[in-house]
Image (cartoon, rainbow, N blue to C red):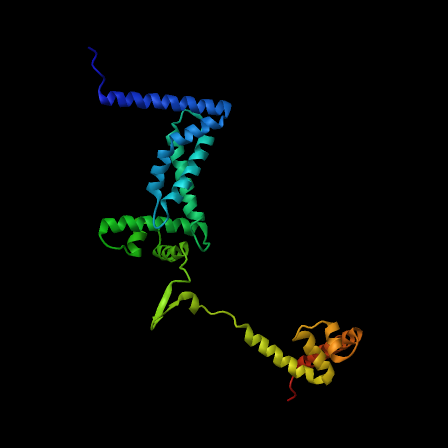
Amino acid sequence: MRTPPPAQGRSAAEATDRATADRLLFERLADRRDPVDREMLVERFLPLARSLAARYRRGSEPFDDVFQVACVGLVNAVDRYDPARGQAFSSFAVPTIAGEIKRHYRDRTWTIRVPRDLQELTLKVERARGALEAELGHSPTATEIAERLDVDEEDVIEALQARQAMQAASLDVPAGTDGDATVTVGELVGTPEEGFGRAETRADLEILSRVLRPRERFVLRLRFEQDLTQQEIGEIVGISQMQVSRILRSSVERLREHALAQQALERAPVAA
């Protein structure tokens, strides 16, 4: 009776067979560029992409988003891998997938754009802070992080401040309460009040329009305040559309001349 090989021997043999099968499949893909072979290889190494996504996931970033980025890196690795160089695919794929995930964090997760070198330092500071917190049992200081990374303390402080740009706070977040009514951050943000500008414009026009005759002022109000057409104004005033056009043109020109004259007087030097 034949004795079965030890489990360790079977595992080693299976790994060798799988590596051989992968190499043959990569060689066939390089030769034929068959989409089916490409899909088989991607599916074969999905566990590797999933493992790297779990390793590099951090913060509140959804795992599915990181895994999707890792899959993009895996596809790129499959397309770029050259089996003729003799390098194991996993050795080639790991830095490719990890690089894709790091670029995702660097370029896609920042709400406010900051310089790339500051982004990279911020990510290093974040990793160092997590490691030091686990080692020291308390939140590390900027000095401790700077010593771990061998950088200036000022750079660490800048990176910690830049980290706030990775996520923006919602304007719907409560800013405080006033009785039973909740006030959101958005409600406290100031906005330009156009009403003041319109009021000032109306006041300026009222002063300027004093150089016009009553009928001219009336025609201007119908045109620019009530937005009537020249034909409609003519029917109200009892004149032709051509006359309305002449009144509007001459009135606007007189207002412009008067406004320029007023500006010249205001800029003129005051006699001693």
